[in-house]
Every structure is written in structure tokens, then in C-alpha cells.
Length: 71
Figure 1 (cartoon, one colour):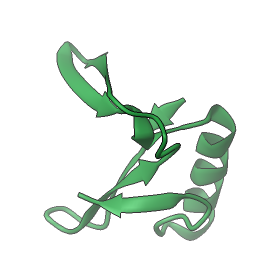
Figure 2 (cartoon, rainbow, N blue to C red):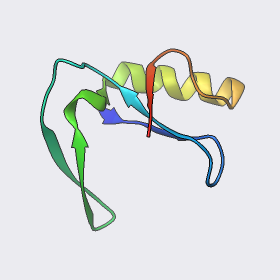
Figure 3 (cartoon, rainbow, N blue to C red):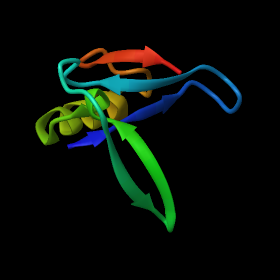
Figure 4 (tube, rainbow, N blue to C red):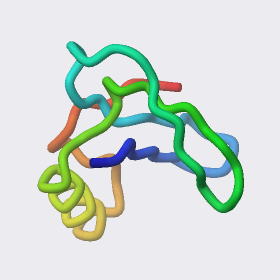
């Protein structure tokens, strides 16, 4: 799975995916040499990632197939 971020525009509103809200804690990930902590409740399944990507590529808007939380 993965945590998905969506940015409306540079400097605009940002959103993060909501996965299973029952999952607590964080997970450490290394992205391009930088360490980040992701909330486990923001991680969505691989299947959902594909749905999000397909919907985004179709409409180029915030996908409605997943719940989002404003950052």
C-alpha cells in the first residue's frame, strides 16, 4: 500500500488519502534519501492506488474513489 498526496495547485490546498482509520501509529519510509513518518491510517491498498490513479488520469481532479483529509 501507500499514502497518497494530492495538491490542487502549487501553494494550494493539499490532501492525504485515508485508509483504515483503525490503524494507529506510524511507519518510517525513505524517499530519495529523506526519512518520513507516515500515519498508518493514511495507507491505502494497492488496488485502491490503481483506482485513484485511473480516476485522476481520467479527470485530472481529486479522485472521489477514496476518502481524503486536508493537510
